[in-house]
Image 1 (cartoon, rainbow, N blue to C red):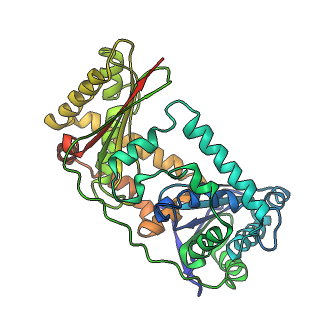
Image 2 (cartoon, rainbow, N blue to C red):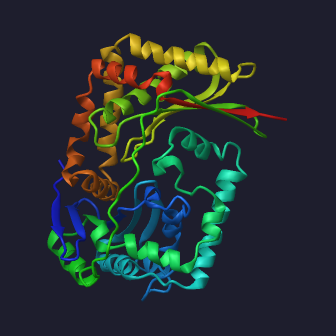
Image 3 (spheres, one colour):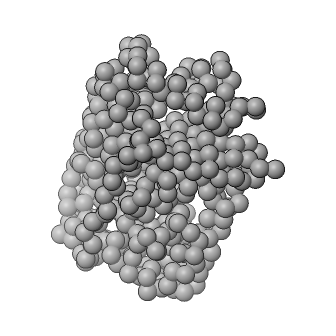
Length: 412
């Protein structure tokens, strides 16, 4: 059981805390409730750009990394379609350095043309390397555009296209920052060797003076229910063809979320999973195949991706996947197979939450989606999934009218 302390500063910054005396380190995880879904469709990639800009210097700290290194710390950040997440770990004696650094870049970035240009080029280069010049790199763009027609999940975190970042003006960047990177749009999670009293003292000292900001209320267009199978075929210079299938699923807080997560493990997690045993080892239809969920806060996708074996067409590969999904719909999962998957989830959760930084990150996310204490209920939620629930979810999910299929064909 992870004990959680709570406090909210006058400026709206939510603080969650867990003391862990087994470590000499302290973690600060700062989650901003902004991701790619909050971007203008004509100005995408901004949340990801800010992941980089936040390390480019702030009002009173020209260089973020040097003080971190001098204090014996480490830091990083990541962005997805829902959130932007920053973390820093430090020896507990130097923890105030973390509060100072994180508060200064929340207060204001150093909006210099040089910093913007440097980070702009970094992001553009990343876009080129990951999505344009890498085999199958544009698949995430293609399958999202196929599956989503209205919701901003229709573009990935990197953005729709390079031009949106290349043409971003200083005024647009500043406006995005002051709208979203605000104390009243953030959750500060502090874990490790630090008391709740010390956490509040340092939070009040460094974050307390930062004023609230006018955070736009989120009014995202709701994705309409898909009513027919969607298909797209592209031809690219890749070693072998690939198939990408996406099925719409529930949001992160829906009870069925855990059934969806278990389904993907039944299908493709480990050598004894169904796809691996049947489609790779026995039938030799695929050389590789994977199933996973997006894990997004709003209604997400269950993905199935695979590369067929030599001599197997994408049509044959698709049919073999559908046959496996039909088995999941027709025959209730055996208790032993289900228990095996649940045991793996439980061990992963326990192992994951032994690390003070993971706890900090997880507490912030659970506070965003409900309450931080939900971290203690995750194992029980997986444990409570029944065979009949899995069958019911599979029957509703794995139907043609809920599916988008991308054929990624190889050309010489």
